[in-house]
Image 1 (tube, rainbow, N blue to C red):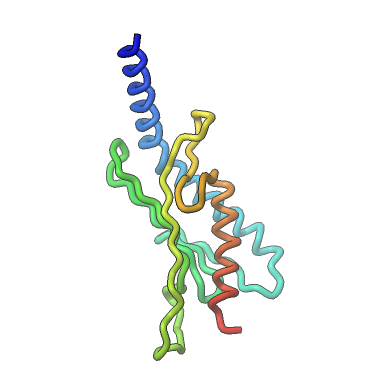
Image 2 (spheres, rainbow, N blue to C red; image 1 turned 30 degrees about the vertical axis):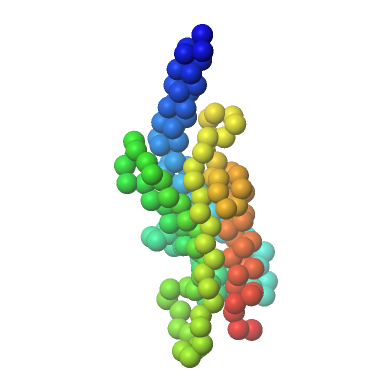
Length: 154
């Protein structure tokens, strides 16, 4: 019985791993779609803040002279490893006048796809805890605004 239980646990872990490998990239693409839609909604309500600009190639989101880069890397759709890094830093196309001072340090958050307790969805786990794509979308926009306010000359 013990061997059967171990085989079943191993089979279950293999099924979980396969689910994650098969669904991580499509969930990342859904995250980008949600982020793009959310930006359209949020930009309507911004008053004294620069609008968010979404760039699909990259991909990254810009607000003023700050940006968040969403780096998702999965070499093969049926094999790991999968890397997902959020990097908050300077906007790449900006011109900066602080030639003689140190630029602000980028903030990086490392995430991994995981299966949600309800085994039909991917969640993102890592430095930020466990987040659905919807929550991660909100975090990206809120934290980008915080980063912008902290590191931009006003």
